[in-house]
Length: 372
Figure 1 (tube, rainbow, N blue to C red):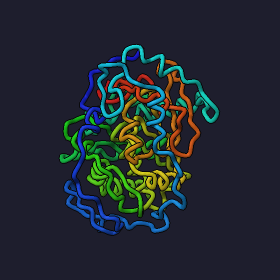
Figure 2: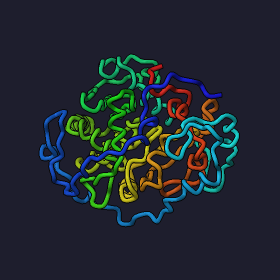
Figure 3: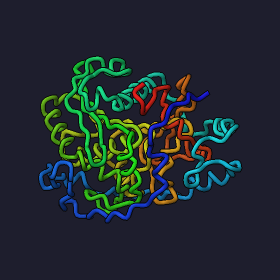
Figure 4: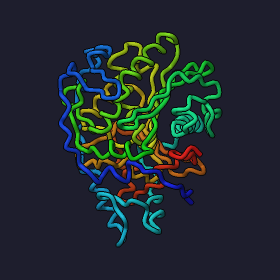
């Protein structure tokens, strides 16, 4: 039985409803990128490391119709089902059996107790970003604060007026880790960002394209993130770097990690990890291949029938990277790991078109959106 939550205005409601007419961003990695929040350009940022900004040596040969084919095999949706694009906006009545009936095939394994525990703690960190005492209040005082990191030192909280990009940076002496966390959509302003739907050129990497709104929202805090993280990795050279986020914040977490990797030699695949929850698709096949080529571990957790990881649809040229953790049951925390280079037909994609907004706000029983 899924817990019902009062919904904030989420990107899953609005992402499919509008197409941006925003101009593509320049391919030239040195081109200035306007930042209205800080009135800076990329010229004031640390320079790109050329060896870390090269396109992936090979682009995946991936059937971008996979999701559509699965949907047609599983469908059709019952009459009068409310939808967004090709997917159910909420699970139709009695559809749960259809979603839960998929058995684990070859290439799918069950996450260990330790792996689930790590994912659970990062889900708590992502939830903390929705708490106003934390962001912008700068107080480590929230329902999951102490259980996630009990010795957190807040180094930075950030929020922007224009597009409502929010999050925080903390350090933990006991865990020897720098945590960078982005908040998901929780306001009309963020929803407007989400509605900028077209792909635009991803300036650092030739051939890569990303969701326009996701990238612009990250750029609004780019300099602040680079400056703060640069100082912290110098101050704590033996600390690990851990980046996480939920929903829109998940997309920003990936973009921020790539930016840090491209501009700071200290950020490597051996000391940096990404954990995302309800991550929407961020970019095209070239971008997904580039993220994979960095070898930075990227755990992409999806709860059951969460609709957001299926947006924008694969058929529109967007593709996930990262290793998928699929939460089959919140109560028991049963989580399956999908071993695939990019996306698997055996985990959350197997649920289309029977998808749900409710699942987007509940990860391991942790509310993502209301600071509960």
